Length: 267
Image (cartoon, rainbow, N blue to C red; front, top):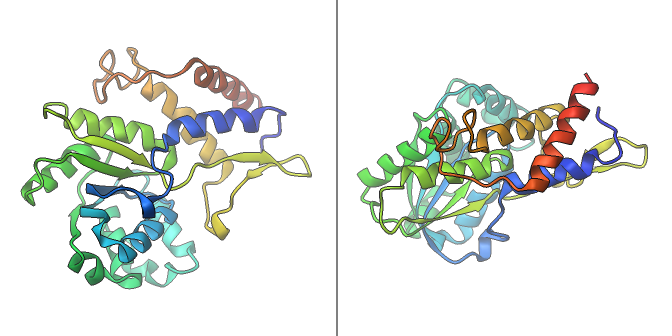
């Protein structure tokens, strides 16, 4: 467990940057052409999204449930099994692609017909195994359904991967003029603080919904910054070319460096 005095502040700097929250309240957001939810082990996002769409299907013309079977899919199976509401379908979803897990949650616990009859078409992209494929295969599924000329699209993703996912969609639609406006909605921004006994804990427990174990969370946010850098080792144009150029602010790099030192000395 990490306990250094400024660790929580540095973690929060990275978390806020990576979460890239551009929509504060989905329920009152202006209507868009498309919503894409990239599946993750943080099921709060899907639960919140489906509830909002059930009450306001006119929020979007279509919804893409996105995600295949990848290296993190087992975390999603575990999250369903441990969820206070969704655990009863754990055996049914085991082995399914991530998008199909979302679809099963939608069909079992929400009213899909209310959403579709309200004008929101539901599409499934269940082959992608990374952010780049989330974007390119979502574009393919959307085009096949007649949604070629997107103007506005809200992307919902795990906060630790939100910024990179939005950049991946910008890359996937880079040949389209004018390009769609992609808007980030992580649903929440994780913050840590020091508890009275001096340990780090999540500031908002999301009403008991499970978040990442802290070591896993730290591993995720530390791993994102090198990917976002536009250098020979990053995912930008000077590196692997997976995403457009992203500017990583100085204060984020400094917080990342301090956290790396804390992480290394705590092992």
